[in-house]
Length: 226
View 1 (tube, rainbow, N blue to C red):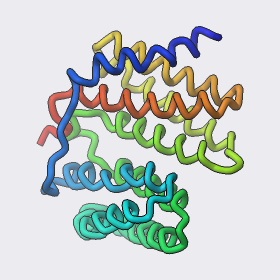
View 2 (view 1 turned 120 degrees about the vertical axis):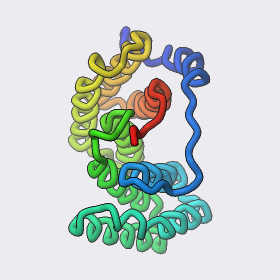
View 3 (view 1 turned 45 degrees about the horizontal axis):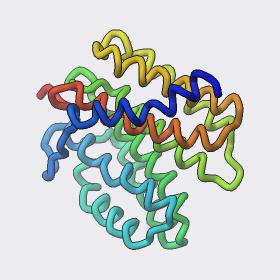
View 4 (view 1 turned 180 degrees about the vertical axis):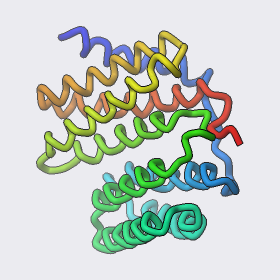
């Protein structure tokens, strides 16, 4: 077993010791600022990944209902073209749910998630946008890995993007050396999984990415400056 694989196996232990110290709560009501609205309204789209891949129809229906209730707030803070794209994607999610295609629901949900994150105003964020993009990467990898025939080219692009996003914030933003080293190893593990086309290792790396995003979020006092 390579050192990278050994590092991946050890992530669970380190994460367990860090997650409790850095846990965050999620606000219940929709905030009023652009960033607050967009960050809050990403929740149903990321929450749809697991039930979507498992085809849990009741959970999918409930989360889509939440997304529908928040849709108007989202469209009000997006540019006109992005708001139109958002509405089209939400419609595709409903169509996929009606067709009982949970993976398509999750896949389109991640496109929405990325759309919302891309329109965050970086200058008023405490948690760097790249942290949310790493969250996107983890979920997207899970969805791509769940395909009957995984598209390794698409998977490789997500892995490359994740590496780029992490490099942008690792040293300038993350002062905790243990966290920085662990996330770096996780990204390398994902890249190795792509090189080897090792689906099990990829799935494990994607989950560790998501777990470590929770740790990264906990390093910052709150997500928005104002």
